[in-house]
Length: 188
Image 1 (cartoon, rainbow, N blue to C red):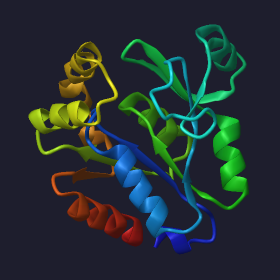
Image 2: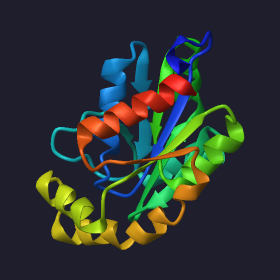
Image 3: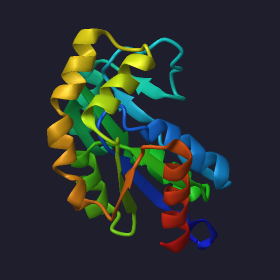
């Protein structure tokens, strides 16, 4: 089991908006002690209830680009008109503390992280279909219709990269998806 290895693991989760990546991350964190998510930087504004330093580090575009220019970002991408990225210091600090690290990043970031951390396990989270993905985005009531439509416009592109991952989990029924993800972690 990855969680019993002597060194901590990195789990990369990717998939389209509404696939359930955050929910599955939280399930893994609950099931495997010493597991946490790496807090990403973003240029987007906080959603209601999001906390600086817990959900994201919210920075303006110039500060984000300065981190990139200084080589501090392991991976970054523009997604839905905002910049998102993972700093090396945030991941390395968690690994040095012996923590398992979950990264919720897009396919571009996953590709980059796999090149930097070849032993990282990558899992693509897929909703059962595009309509269900959109329904989940509407149900969470955090984004405007315009933002939801923007997120849905990249659905096909996101799905086209799932073969690049070590595993795919279809998140149709949450309990089944959690079980499948934990089995993958157990046998990897």
